Length: 111
RNA sequence: GCAGAUGACCGGGCAAUCGCCCACGCUUGGGUUGACAGCAAAACUUUCAAUGUAACUUUUGCCUUCAACCGAAGCGUGGGAGGAAAGUCCGAACACCACAGGACAGCAGGCUGGCUAACGGCCAGGCGGAGCGAUCCGACGGAAAAGUGCAACAGAGAACAGACAGCCCUAAGCGUAUUAUGCGCCGGGCGAUGGUGAAACGGUGAGGUAAAGGCUUCACCAGCGGACGUGGCGACAUGUCCGGCUAGGCAAACCCCCUGCGGUGCAAGACCAAAUAGGGAAACGUUAUAGCGUGUCCGGCUUACUUCGCUUCGGCGAGGGCGUUUCCGGGUAGGUCGCAACGAGCGGCGCAGUAAUGCGACGCCCAGAUGAAUGAUUGCCGCCUUCGUCGUUUGAUGAGGGAACAGAAUUCGGCUUACAGGUUGUCUGCACGG
View 1: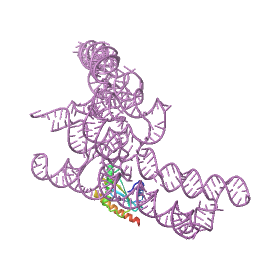
View 2: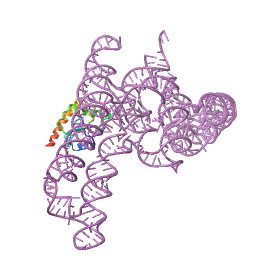
View 3: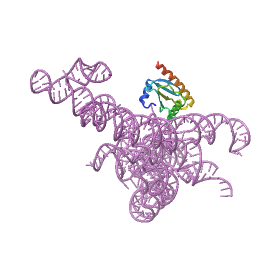
View 4: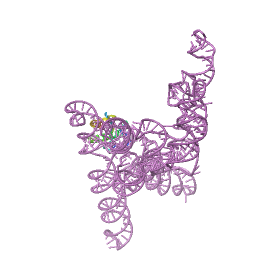
């Protein structure tokens, strides 16, 4: 879990990016050796209740439906306004595409 | 039955799977510190003539047991968002800072009585306004006896008022047929009628007048001031008499009167406290405790400050600088507490009170996160709604869609604002029936 704004800032500035219509993803290799992630929902998306629900659904989708094994680094997800109306299965599909793409990007960085 | 008024309450439910946070308990293994015992090594001392042995003490290391604390994993039990958690508008608790007393300034409040820790809150009442009514709304002290200021639009005129339409007097003159009728210059009177406006300087009647007017101390009414009663704790209501003779509105404009108020807010504040840099003190060094070299030690090699005084000219002493070690104190990152279960606490009951509320006994312990937990997914049921089919009064069934406002952040008491849908008590008006 990423816990302060310095860590988020570093991922935004130096990380690899990938965008879908529901959210934007940023990832950066870290030296911890495990996956740390953070979720950001701006006030533009909605009030506190809506923002909380976005974070919970993204976290649950990552936890239950996505295979994250072997992936290391700092991952940041930014929800967009379409996320609020999205079906859960659509979110999962978008996440699958995103993670596959991020694996490619990270392996390129290694070589 | 329809249309309203008002109070109280709810704010989808169940299941499956996978998860999150907190408290407590148990188990497992870990770390730190301390105590006791044991073993090993080294040193020292004592005993014996000595090798050596034994004992004692100290230090270091290992390890057993016990205790305390810290943090981890697993399992179990219990708990886990709102009526507004929201806006952050009032009032407090709590914390820190400041503080002789008073005045000015500033801010807030403003009918009466009560409740409360307090309030700009609540309850009961008075007065004014809206409504047929239940009921609702009101910053509701002072504008005639301090002063200043302001007033859109409309209207003739808006604060020492004002003739637009008009009414009346006078009547040059026009016109006609000399009268009458008609039009009426100049000058003067009128605030009664119309129209405007939120508001036009009391109302109705009578007298009076050329026409009018509180012009009239003519009558009645309204309003104002005063005195004296009656009811009420009081706001106030009400009665009689007297006076004066009509006085516009706005104080959520300045202002006047009365009352209250020190400031900052849990990022308050308390404690622990790293790395790095810097401050202070002591000791040591300044021909080594630095550098080179090395696994380590000895040895070796290399290099090094200044001022003053004394001097046998080799140095010595004191101070400063520099270096090393130890200690001290301040601050930052970070962490712990504050802060999560004992309270202005919650629940129903009883008593007092019209009520707000208070008192009493009984029962209960009820979120505590910090990139921020309190959930996610799926299915079924219930609710609303659209379409189709059947029945065609309620309804049955299939397919689809929808479900508000909104997320605790130190804690309470209020206020204000937002809110799909629903439950329920009491009351009012109208209609109909018995």
